[in-house]
Length: 183
Picture 1: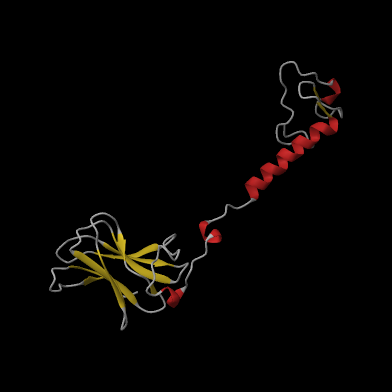
Picture 2: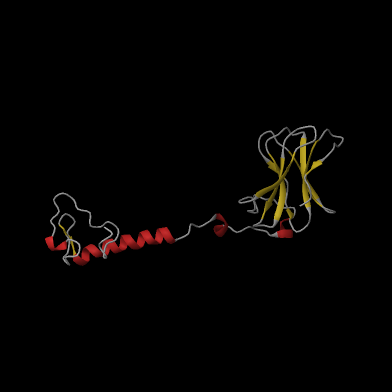
């Protein structure tokens, strides 16, 4: 009970048949005798103190995050051309822009990982005639094809340069790309 300075976490719960020292009532300065458990005085204080400390430790200890356990394998330009999932950059990534083809079709997401300082394009399940890319302004682009079986994504680019995501229906002759703005 909260009024017991030795045992603040409800250690004085009474069970039918417990033998209590009448002087043990709060403020009387006596000891509780828990006959069933065989605990008196200092023997009662230790389990109560242990319970209080364990409870405090569990409540005050922050949970380990995936980031603390498994750091990203790359950062910035060292991520360029690499897989966002295998490098540990997918967790916690944010969608910062989206684009759909002008004539309709699947949405492509432009994703960014602050943890890795990198970006990539991602598309949900879609007909494989769709292709999409992440493009660095004045530099490389990484293209991938959609899949009807799973979400697909491009390789990453470091996010210190301007980049964008684009999508097109691929008919073998090249189509018209629809793109996000530059970020």
